[in-house]
Image (cartoon, rainbow, N blue to C red; front, top):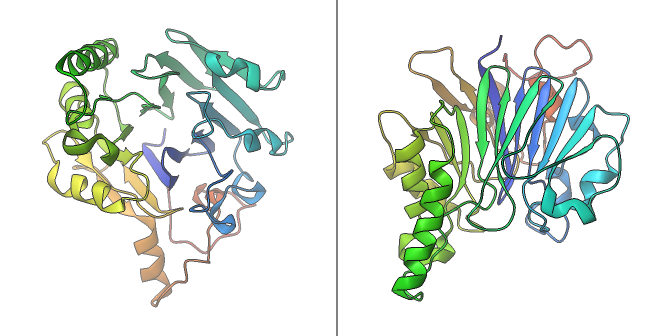
Length: 291
């Protein structure tokens, strides 16, 4: 079984994780989002070659639940795993599965468990290809220390710590978690606690809006013996994570593409996600990527 993954960032809380022939899509959004120009959006070419595509909706807000996901061709092997609070806005289809806090389900070998949030919706633990992937949704330590009362701050902390305590201490391989500068001086408090409490092996900051420097600075200074923080800050920027090496390796696919081309690669040359499928005779790619 493969122990490698290609993690691709799009914007805000949107990531894809490609593991062998399974594609996981978290919190996809493109509607009313000028930062994600059309060439960087998901399209049919990204789905070819995958035997299993699972789309996760952790909350019923446009940031996490863009109706465009239901317009993708249903001839692809797509299953939607949707937070129960989004039930009224999700289509009634056999491939739309609802999940609430505490719920679990299995989709073609992908195991999903829903945990709580300190906001609306749920957080998600997904097991695929022998790896455990955690997407926080809107789980975070949401308080504005410069503005909130001490009572508000205490309540926010109690709620957040309680939700995190309910997440099992089983190893987490990949984690996507908010680092939101709108929270002010303690914007990284939730992320710091989660890293110390649950020790994910690779941590990707998200939910930082247009402040890429926030994610980059956090990755530079937050490093522990058990967690590697890696900042993806450009649409379609991809990290190749290899858990078979010791220590584990996280490589930037864009850097490898540029090196392979031996020159400057235009950002318009978007590579579809299906290029990361190994040994796929139907995948046309010249990338030096072997997952």
